[in-house]
Length: 447
Image (cartoon, rainbow, N blue to C red):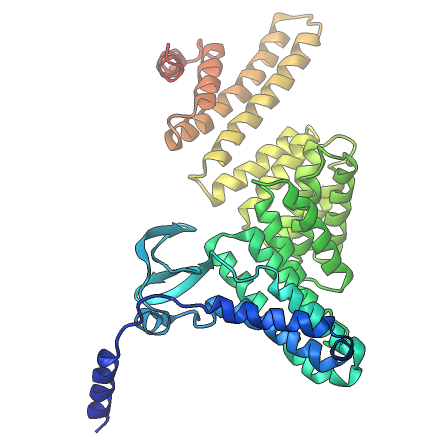
């Protein structure tokens, strides 16, 4: 019996003629807005809360109409039945994933495995309709607080719609528009009739602007304001990453004002106090302390990172950071020990092997400088020190060789190998290595 019903339903669907194109009755929607404009211009109607509630509803309808039939995981066939045939279809890649892009009058739907995954609105009846709806609902509540329930219901619809716009903006990589949508969703919830607004919406907006800041530095300014406001409102994600993103937004503004470097540091220190296990925050602190003068003494970070390593001893990034801290402190033995742990945990990591070679070389350079400043009273003492220096340089060679095996076209690695092997050319087998790496270096340089 069930099979018969399903078969009949399928036949019915096939019998329904396909809608030819997406239709949005823009004129009817704008007519409602025009009527509302006339109503609020009328002295008698303008003082009634109902007039403004109806205005809020009208703007909400304007906002949702172009995409109201869409939802995530919607069957592609259902999309065609609900909206019509697309104007065109092509392949498009978003965030590294290829989709079938179905182009309609007001949006492009991205379909994969016959499901609507996300969409991008490309045309609006009125782009500021959500903001206009919020203004109208707020006015209604101002005129009559007894309308709170109706006003809150309308504001929740606006907030939910804007949050959906934010979600689809993330999926399509439209981060600035997504951030604006989340901010508008928060604005709707911040209305007097709504109650307590969710500061997570500010966090989402601020995070997206942090991501966009790499290509558009102006986004760092707005992102910092939104993240700061979210923190002031008591928000913190489970891991405390909000402080790391705030650091990025502030640090990204250092060229405009150097004071932002200190503000970035303060954000991280506040974050690490509340979330001592957050490795991103630790990494941000290491970046600041080891690359910016006047920020502070990198030694202050040793206790922080050693505590983090104690809790997570197999975290490569923490050991990598520890090596960087001790390099800044000119404690090359500790840098070497840290990077030995890096390559122990991740043997084929180019950076681990490369920097281990670098730190051995730096240590050798420091010993060589000390040697050149000494006054020797015997050849034996000089020879002993020279052997000690060369032993350190020799220890760098196999790490650079491993780095070269991992990344054969890295010219810096070849230059180190060429220079080290030339210095050590009198050691057994090293002259042959010099000839090999010197030839490779010349080829890489195009000589």
